[in-house]
Length: 140
Image (cartoon, rainbow, N blue to C red):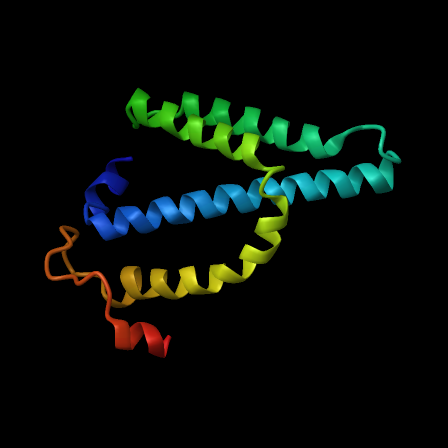
């Protein structure tokens, strides 16, 4: 938490982190749902309901890990657990969408490379760093 707070003060940086968090949680939970459904179909002939149980077990383990973590304030840990819970609850309603959005990860990765590798200032304050260099982004 200390490193994140120190290194990520720019509004664009925080916005991109939030976008990536939402994308990653959504994609992971939909992936778990599909893996669970496939395992259930192939192994248990549909009787084990792994499409529900696998994401639930993952949510419980991640929530416990986040709540037991030290170094971050309680409010931050509770917010992280709330993000996991939201992703778990929304996984079925977004299943078809995430199959199509997998291709958007390429665009997010190009922006991340530009912001965090190419344009990163030598100091961690973010001073002197522009939010986007559009010609450079187009070249990526």
